Length: 255
Ligand code: NAP
Image (tube, rainbow, N blue to C red; front, side, top):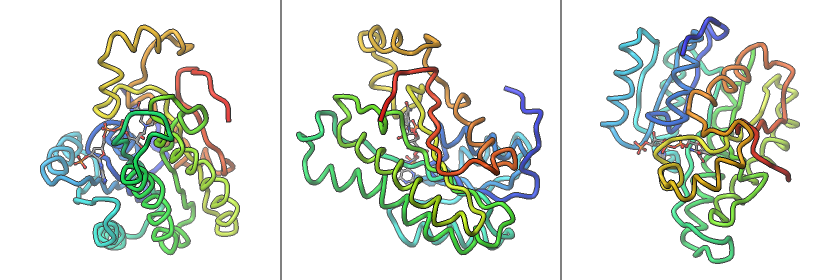
């Protein structure tokens, strides 16, 4: 994948859960477009490996461990951003889906975990980023939701509800932050080949029914999602706020 554009030179970005999958692809793309990027995830080894992969490409990145549900870990991200000059772009990407099943079969424990990571941590990261984003010329909040937030799958019931909550967070926060010239949007991926989706994307039986429902008749790859993040982060996206953008190869979706 080549990137001709350099729309983010001089910008500073934090991307959570970015040592593999969609988060990694977004971090890589933002850095290729010229941003200084802080990548992070829970495990030191993953952070070291991912940071090295990006540094080896000559990109301006640094890595930190951060479990998004831990307040001290989130604080470290913003301290690092301050050290290198502030913050222009926050991409909140972490999510879990510990259970498979209908929404009303979800245990209270799983429900709390899903909402803690997928919704509350995104809310807190956004809240904590605001003082720095207010000092940016072009502050950007980007949440990674899911097409499941529009159209729940039968088997990821509670996860889908958490992703719908993010769609609402985007709408509400975009109104509040418009006064600060901070845009707030989400990207809602379809079926993207990653470790997270592996139980689906490596199951031929499931794929036989899932792929025909994708207009482009193929699974997405993480780099299929990262261009949308770069667009929203850049000046090209400066008049786009309060939007939940589906990147799914044309899967059916409705709210
Ligand atoms: P992935 O490839 O499995 O990557 C997950 C990343 O998250 C890893 O870097 C992991 O590293 C990190 N991570 C996991 N839990 C974390 C936590 N609590 N705090 C910080 N980092 C954490 O996942 P993905 O498929 O790219 O998913 C990324 C986002 O896209 C999620 O929000 C997901 O809901 C959304 N999404 C994915 C798909 C899809 O089909 N793949 C579709 C729609 C939406 P460590 O293990 O080191 O923490």
